[in-house]
Length: 427
Image (cartoon, rainbow, N blue to C red; front, side, top):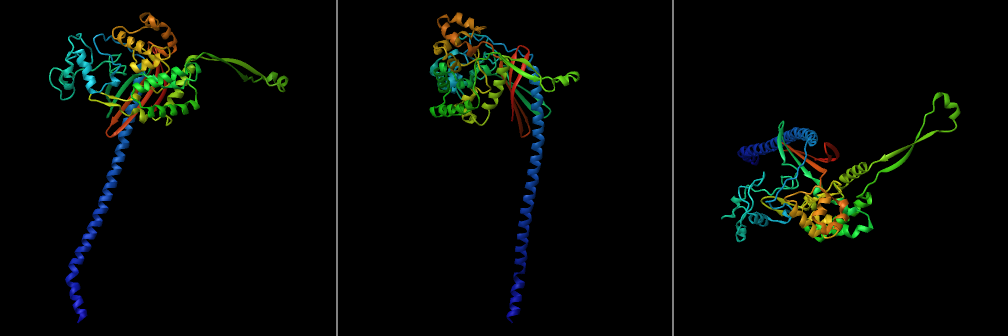
């Protein structure tokens, strides 16, 4: 009797059991289907990314060859900017200060990135500075300045030598940017091991760092990192040709082998290593060292100002490629002051240069001394650290295809039509 009752209970519950088993099977199948489809989608994504990256890499490499070939014909020309604000202090300006500077120069829609055709008239009302920027209103509002771009020494925004170029190579969008490395603070200066200029080296380094808004902890951390670099290789500012004597073995002729078999013969050759060869070798070494893990570039790249019109960080103003000289026509204020610390009167000299170069760039250092004859002795002491013509540039190339991105940075020296490739980093 119990057995028959159990059978009846099982019979009544059988549909529920079947339903439960069916649900479990459906859940398992759905899970397996989801896992399988996810893996297939992930594999497709990886495959597509590989394809996109190959296209981006091809576009980047093609643009590198194009840029190097084109650089031979590019002759960077400095422009006159008498009726425009100088780019020198943009590193220290937030949006309010930036638009306030435009208001002081009364630059309206007639001014564009291609030039200014009108001189500033009456000063704008600085009480309206709080109305500047996005959402501003009134005569000093954002709409009055949306076409404005403070030009750098070559016409393009600092530190670009030309306006960045964008074009298509296949399915990749390529961007080429050329930067003036002689407009930046040479990081190698901190490694100069000369007791006679140690005080000036330290003072120039601290001057630059503080004006670039690095705090005491960041300055000390960078100093410690550079000390480790100095243990690897010293940095030199001056180079002279080196003459070395190399002995090479001389292979005797068949007729003379019997006479010379016991006495090896050699010939002395004199080899001269030019100063330019030594500079190129040092630049290549430090380009690699400064971009290694020894220097925390992430900390230097951390923004100090994020504004509507630009982003600022200390790294933007640091020469990381082994440059040795600063171009007085293209360097901003804090770089100029760091350079002229070697001779003194750096604040006065930097300010005078900034005011004078708006209208007439300096062709030679002698021209600078003639204009600032009061400081000629100070300028003489800085002669090996400054120049009036940039010869050191970096070419930054970025290619994007789909979700993939490829980049290359190339350091080059340019002397007339001769372009020498110093170092390259691919990303």
